Amino acid sequence: MANPASRDQFAAVKGVDTPRGVSRNHMTRLVPTLAAAALLVAGSAVNAAAQLIAAKDGPIVYGHHHLNTANVAAQKKFFVDTLGGKAITIGTNNTEIVEFPNVLIFFRANQAPTGGTRGTTVNHIGFSVPNLRQMVDKVKANGYQMITSSEAPGREVKDDIAGPLQPGGASIAFALGPDDVKVEFLEAKQQTIPITLNHVHFFNPKNTEMQAWYVKTFGAKPRNGGAFPAGDLPGVALNFSPSAEPVVATQGRALDHIGFEVKDLEAFCKKLEADGIKLAVPYRKVPALGIAIAFITDPWGTYIEMTEGLDKIQ
Image (cartoon, rainbow, N blue to C red; front, top):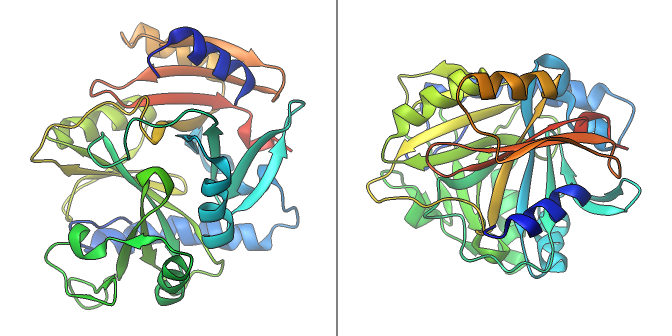
């Protein structure tokens, strides 16, 4: 968002992918995701804290997507009624969010986005599902546009599902949610829960430089040799595709910012500053949610929130 004052006000109350083709990268990528899913099913508590199950597996994990929207009800119809997320309220201010395994979705209500996710540094978000046909049919039945044919070049697309590029690969599909949020679904037949976070997909003309930055800054494990470079954190893949066209910053768009959950966030912020990374919003605590937050912007304009405590929110 362009207005720093409104951004601060918001912060105070707040709160394997394949558009270019699935390769062995995706089979490798599914292992940690499915392992996390199995652990989630084994757990007894069904609450927001349980949803960030991967938080126990590393000092930095993915935490949340934060969307700008003028219509929260429409977003809930998509993410809850269609995709199967769970609507909950958290904190003393009853912040309304949607939870999925390993990701929470926050809404910046009454803020119409300036555009969708395509054309920004974060082209789309991705979930894995055990039955892709079932998910696609539900998305279409609820009135949302499937865009697989335009987003999966080089693949055979049949009835809005793009088949694998090679034997043993995964089938994928793309949809547009409210406010033109682009979402990918990747089929993981051995997955034991209906849906879980799979990836965040960045597009950038300098995608390899972007990969290196996220590996260095957040400790993602680099992965190369597939359809595009990637970096893995517990429960999520960060994928980096080259973009032939320039991309713009995320602030103000449908996906305003992405979020990482960080252990000992205050110390991490000091390290970032020592490394020459300026904090857009300094470390602070948010008593209403019982968490701490800080913001940075990557060199290409991706707005990033860092939190500590989302994994414990009830």
